[in-house]
Length: 258
Image (cartoon, rainbow, N blue to C red; front, side, top):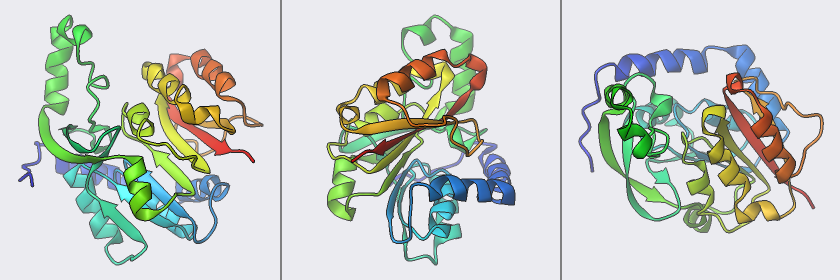
């Protein structure tokens, strides 16, 4: 197990995020309305990339049982403190991807919600080498690296059962997580960002989308579905490509149709 010395500024960033996520009652109500369209009491949720656990709280308010994965030690500790007395919340301190084993996690000292196992998210590779000033900046923000366990969705399903909702927010690693899934899950959400549209395109192109899924999305932190009616994977891809870069990020929701 890693003995972690948190980077300078991490505790302050965690405290700021905790206040933002747990102090806004209107946001909580909007989140409950959103997820209430996908969940009923007794359902099972996989929260992949639970961060500080505010969505865990929403899932529990709706009566769902939660399996939460969070590899970053700081947020994982916060989740344990907040949900430690709840027997229907199971925290697994691990990453999720397309293989079992271990993986490197780069921890953000300024924003715990942006710690990531995705090299592409950090701008690694040829593009990074051509921009040394960007590389220096990223080393300042994500320069702390630890090795964490990595599992797959199929392994989680084998152990805990098929979830009714699969929520994924893993900072650019979403397609890798979905590549470890070979079962049709009733409802799936995954984060997208207009700066990294290729990640969402990769999710939409995975074999599971060939099944009877229809798609909608939320923009930013609106907690509100943006489209009047769900659309096909192809139409969702076109919609995402048409968003202005200023749209920032959001979540795509996929629902399995009968």
